[in-house]
Length: 295
Image (tube, rainbow, N blue to C red):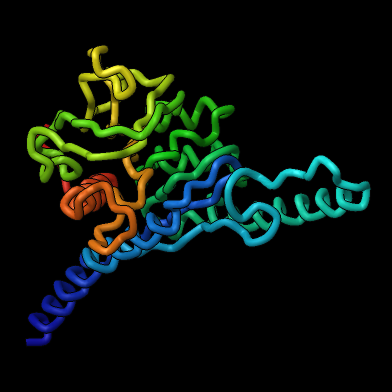
């Protein structure tokens, strides 16, 4: 009887450990353009974590002060020497706050996480150890990147290589039809043969090679020149060492991200927003190894 009880306890403990949610660190800091939709992304990711029960989220967020929104603050043309000195001091103080916040991406702190999400980050973020960060992903961890994460670290080739592409430019917001390249992948299985978005900002990429990633969504028409046909990436995934990388360039507009039917000035339907949320959740689940694809 004692032996049976011990075996049952071991089995129960194993099941409990197996069910423990994964831990994700969500980064929304910026040193370049700051998207107004970042708080909406933060809210969506928190809700996906809560509803799925599969993972938890902690945040690396923008410090208050010198440049809380938009591009980094700029001096007025008629600034006095006193204004300039105060501006410089505020900039130094804010940069120190940013560095302190990004210490959460140190190799020691990343030991507590299964993956990292870059949600519309931009610019050159002062993370403490670039090589250590890439090695952490290579060692079997998840990297999930949303929209402007491709507009980050333009001076760091290793980051673009890990991600699989780099933001080049975008045109005016437009309606697009994204073609599903893998109906078995958790990030696209729910989208059918195509995913139509009524209005969204669509990125074009450099340092992207379709042979080095696994495309999930593409367009066969240029978003700015519909008469031009070709291969235009929208979302992809890839292995990086033993780690997994998922990227979707969608997620600029709040009404793509947020399924609230009462959202002001909604141009995309609630159904589009729900499909987008399922797309992101599937990418997270795949990157964390919670779900797999047959391809």
